[in-house]
Image 1 (cartoon, rainbow, N blue to C red):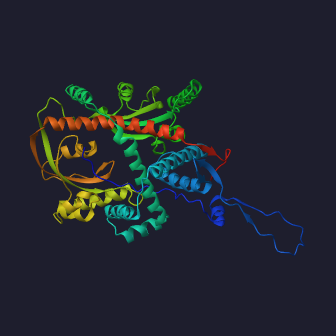
Image 2 (tube, helix red, strand yellow):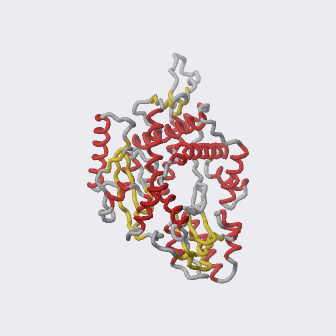
Image 3 (cartoon, rainbow, N blue to C red):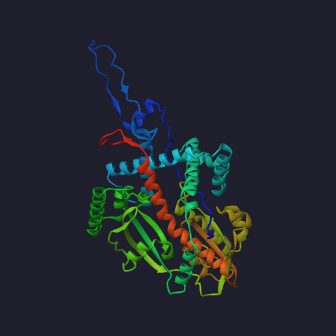
Length: 461
């Protein structure tokens, strides 16, 4: 599937254990008076004693410090507020963040064990690409990060770790997904029937351990039922997801965005098919645990039917402004509105503006994406593209990658070869399997890790 490349700028705390005590205490408020000794009243007060950083968890042979957790809490809290996601209670917020850090640490340890490395040359290239995609020089990009309160060295290490974890997941999950010819045949046969729904979903997962005992399963089911009861009583889904969900998207309020039905597990499709917008599903039991889904929207999707032999292709180009820690959605939309006005007034050419401002790799080609088949792009982009006439430029369009200006250059009809139909089917089946396989692998990795907690109901903040 053709998608628009994007490198997310995920800025999270550096994993450093050697910390300066005075800085720690300034951040944590962990300062205590020294025990006063009997001295004359005229003597100078005893110096204040500062507590050093403490270990909050042990993961296999490494530790997570309290200061690391504090930094992550501050970062994620700021991001959630910017996204309008209600914060969970402090104790649950701390628990969620710590579990995420434990899982990240376990992944990085396994990556190192397998010899997965990202050297400085490769890292420099990745950081340079991020700066280029943000239309900045490396020096300007570094200065912007520093102004936002993120040390450049810490940012580099976070990018290094993200690349390592992505390579690990490709090795352990992506490359092990098997797709049989019979699965492709069945998928193509299903596409001959009327369908093509897309669902906007939010998701809560209460994970069960690998080889869970009946008591553990019963306890997790009870927790999931309690969450479902709160939802049905009017509880905020995003806040409850951030509080209870064990899924990777928990701190985004459980938002899954728009998903095509043929790219969702059949268990999910069966559970949401009769839901109305705004309703939540009953509990869904899978190998990974208990799921709750909320249907936020439903719409028809563009589907390439197996029975069709001819489809419309669109020659299209675009200008993409990505949203990240530096560029807000309002900034991106405002910039594209200005560019649209210049195009409408014939004050500039589309390809020239794409080369100057687009954050996509197609910028060097004037934003040209070539000939697009139905289903090649994300639904938001395809829907806007299909509504345009040749030569027409869209208003700013939002997608998971940011905001786009889209221009249709020309259209044509083309035969869909059998090989392409089977390729599309394989991609869809792989996506359907990937989420569940990734969750299953993460669950197994977490269960195998030795984890020792070194605090009891302590508020890290």
